[in-house]
Image (cartoon, rainbow, N blue to C red; front, side, top):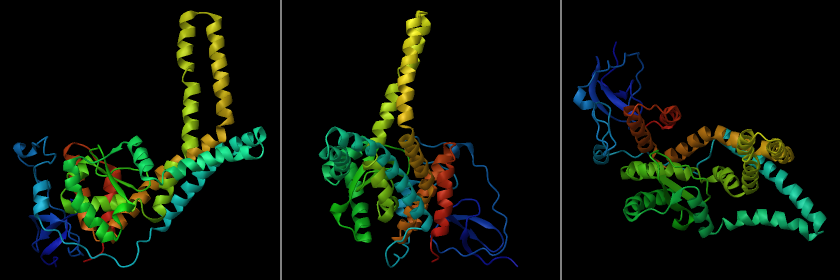
Length: 373
């Protein structure tokens, strides 16, 4: 007995639904709405069709591919999108993202303490007892300055963000206002900035700054609001703690890495000069440079190792934090729009011969996260 006619998840394209007429798959498809039935029987996926050569051409200016499965931006904005109900109660992050976030924070703070601690002790020996307060106060002062809006904006600019242009601001105003109203947040709590990128999501590590890419800023309003909800999810709750630590409390580690790169950078050029000179003095200078660089590296081995460990934990936590940010968008009722935006970006990448595996896994997880209609 075959499954009854109706809309079911497309067996070939994630994030879309295809109509089953009771005997076979039809050509009717639509974005995922969350109202599709469950296919309890095994049905073979529709046979792929080879489109005509002229349908494979894509406009470089529009950024969308033609052919089956493509979703032109104009069509997306014209099609009505059902909104999922907003979940009641606050959004609670998963146990694994919380665990990794706390572990990353602890390791990062341990690395900074391994740098600031010896400096504090040296300052204490030089000027007891108030000398010990100078390094610690400077370290904490850099973090406290970021609570000022001007300092946050300057930090975001150093990370590649900028203020939106006039046209971008007009396009972002309505989705951003709708998102803040949906989340019940005041306007002055977060600031919206833009980063020049063709990716779907921006990666900002500045507290209180929600960044959106230029590609996402050109999306239809419902999908743009869903992408903004994902970015806002990175700034909520415990997700903001590792962001704050990694941006504002790791200044000593970044200075240390700059010092290590500086002391090692003259070694290779000096070696080439020594070989060209064919004089013993050149090789003696190389030996002295290596000895100084090795001594500095040995003294800074512990904080450097902790800094690299914190960076590795941060990369490990990226997938789980992305999933939690997607869950926040679903919590606000923007899950279907976010899934459509992700799938559209995947289709565009596939038309260009790229297959971003992390984004594909994220789409799978997001589809499983969507609540039933």
